[in-house]
Length: 300
Image (cartoon, rainbow, N blue to C red; front, side):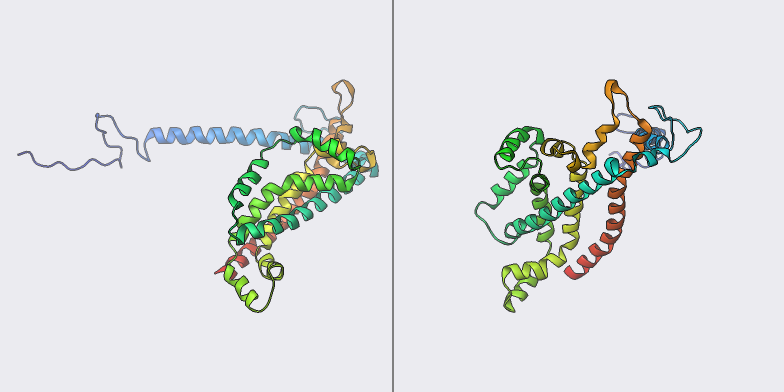
């Protein structure tokens, strides 16, 4: 009777069943794959970094072109040229009004819509959620023609509040999904205690649920704000007066006829246009870290 043999292990690069070496953590094949993955990641990082680097260099280059180069005589002439009320300040103010209003309406309406979906066993709750999820995939270009016709009948074309309502409506589906998920994490026992003390459903939503899910509401508000901030198509179609256009639309004024463009001013304007979103993200993300920790502590 043959003596039993010890099982072969993969550690150390032993031989496989067919006699071929099995690659291990320290094998040359693993190192080659690591080098390949690192090279691919470096290429991807360069693809993202080069446009941003061009933006920073072209903004301080009076003779900027499409080529990435270090300016011979860097200066702030491009910023001085675009920092005028008509070119930058008024469009940025219009963008702030449109995006903040749309974010506020979206958060309030989505919270009210997510509450019954999270707290009650609705007969058509799941089909409704699937319908909402399907609505997030509808492209805006497919619905803009009937929306423009409806807005024209209701005399909402070239009005800021009409544009705000449409921006908020387009953000509602994903906002309802996100806020329902945040609301599911709030213990129902806390609401039941409030109901025992005589609070109504709306009072418990306002006094108990909303404070605990405040980080989630801020996340949805920021997401809606950033989405509306970069939206070019909706205000371009619905707003006609030049003094009502947001910064996302007025950026086209740096492109002239026959493909000519003021690249230096365009880069400076793009940096100013991006600055509010970056500042908002840095400020709120730092505050959200502590808020999420506090929410977890309350839940536990």
